[in-house]
Length: 317
Image (cartoon, rainbow, N blue to C red; front, top):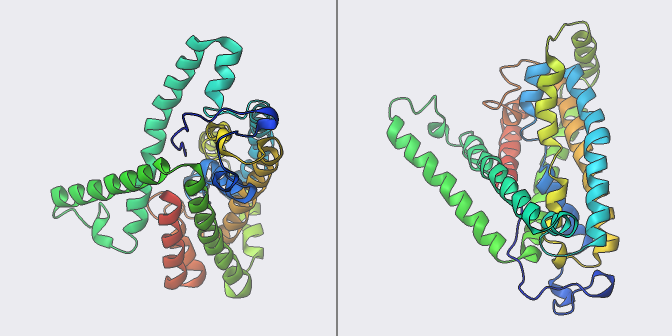
């Protein structure tokens, strides 16, 4: 979740414009779309356990249905309320104006509590993808020196948090520019993987075969397990409202950016999964321990696995 520091004198005037924030300091449509994309998705990373847990057929179904019934209503709600009240604080402002300060504070405390657990995932993911390049960082490889390896992993995780905090403190514009570059890198890596898959990787028809074979299987409890994963991976749309006071023309740009980010989310989930299940449907590979770097290596070789792992570092940061 990206929460840049609030600007003390950012008060919206007519039309949602900020009287004291120069136009060149505001977040434009493209940067806003990329910010929302990384607030809610950031690529297909983290989706791997879904396929390992419920199989390819259920996974594809959930990836296509959940954004429609879960993400779209939330995104539309966020678009409407942010356009109506384009102020710093986002959902805190919505709650305060509707239910009063007491419930606004409660909502903020609940969000902070959730964010502590949520944001703790990303330094761990960063270290996990880094271990693809430095195998000694993986828990299995560091069994001979567990204390030293634990300390190094923690140090790297803390540095990720510090650099992320420093970037957020610079403001929404800088975070938006960083999100643009990160989006190009992450989506570009998956586009390369898809091109390799279509040109010389496993036949796309194998993905359809995997789905058909999985439909004949019985996955007891698959729906609830799958929903617990995919709902998490399709949430966070209201968090894009917290920097509304720093967005250029929020009434126009927020609805557009939210819908563009939703489309990007669906495509960057379903297309790589189709490529991946054509290479393997093994739960041991479709897991948080192996994941996209190993899947990409099966599709195009070591270099492609390294490219996807490098993009994973960008996504986790």
